Image 1 (cartoon, rainbow over the protein chains, first blue to last red):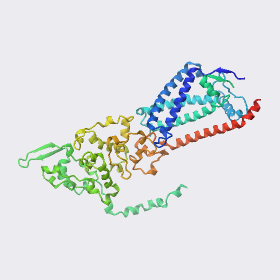
Image 2: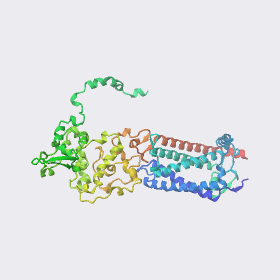
Image 3: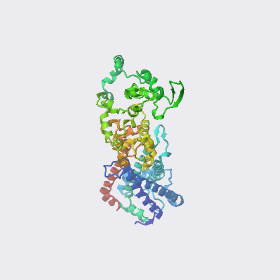
Length: 206
Length: 335
């Protein structure tokens, strides 16, 4: 029998929703700029895309700062602390479950409970995205907004060019993360239970 | 095998090189541009450049024998070094200027001499056919420079025949070309007195008009004025139909897109085939130390990114199918 428990405090849900909306806008406008073409109806007009991308980028930086403070001053931060000992085995166990055990009806090796929000695979990918990909996206994004601060040349290559390419690669990584994140979220007790949880705050245990 | 794609003559060429040099006709060797090689250098320097080639020149009263030094007016000064490096280096001054200039002081009529236009020498001549002077002239006659000045604006307002060099073809530095090209425009558009020579129109300051551009300095250093202010031409290398300011390119996407107009203007000198360089869409833009978002794109990053996203979607799709197919089996085990 399942028991529900309150898992996502209000500030996490507000931050998550803000983050999701801003990321979607940033991805759509980012792709619109990268594949800019006046004849392509699928992309947002370049001028509008730049304006939206800049505004959303600034807002995401603010929202991310709030997330950092939240993690520093509440217990939410502990979910992002990884125990390295036995990490490989835990990752393997979770990967095996997704690829095989899940279909055999095996119990999840690291189910969501009051103490654990993320399984090891989620923990590694969320730490990578939240503490590496996003900060680097902010650094490169802000630098592109103020290109006068970018090194003119780095190892003989244009600094703006390198910054932009890095920004694009990180953008692709974010899109890939988003798809994986969305798909894995359908693997809760029911395909929509995790989505319901992040809206209501109440988690259905497995 | 890559060698199969290289024509055989490429390997034979080095062997033929000495024969080629030996076989060169002396008449076809292009003379080096210098005063020493100019037939008229002595004439020019003893007559016109004796005064006009110096910033300070001397005049002597032939009756009293008194001499004094004078400053040459800036617009009448001809730099001998720059002249002998120009395409017109081999000319005698009087090939283009009237005989009246032989007399000193110059007669008042000389001030009203009709200057030659480029077309007078270069038009309808097969020797210069590749430069398409006739098409340039046709474009110029449709330009705002011609229509708004009643023809007072001539080739010389931009192209000084004394110093003309085909920079777009000869200089390796694109930034330098851009800077020199923009200097031509700012020579008038940055100086009300000079602009007043051809129009009564009040000069509007150029830079404030471009503040709509994000980071205007960066934009104006990386493109020529004419890239936005001329109608794109399919045939001539440098378009000459300068449009009225309100018709200029002002939409970002005109440059910031895969079909950037810059490919038909600033980078037109590069063939279509070689515009995509180093795995980048419109990679030729990098030769200008520039990177244009929307126009430049790494094919490798785009392809890799799309492949990984595609793989993620395929794996998710297959996983979903298995979840649906295996659900009854799973339920059975769970019971």
